[in-house]
Length: 69
Image 1: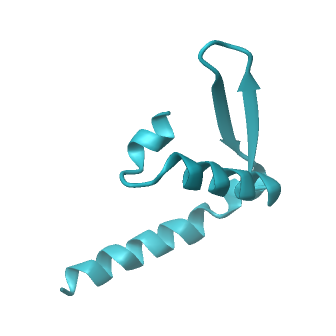
Image 2: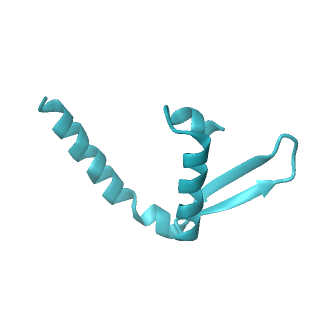
């Protein structure tokens, strides 16, 4: 729910699909809690964390590119 709120305009279906793909790729783990309402927690794996420098570089590039216009 928190992740969905932070991603404006993304449908639940698309978000769930992307998270499942990332889980399948070993980028994150998924833990389901037997609660009502159901709660799911995602955590980056070591492989997922290894992408942090790449993602930060892409963000920095995007910010610089955006300032050009």
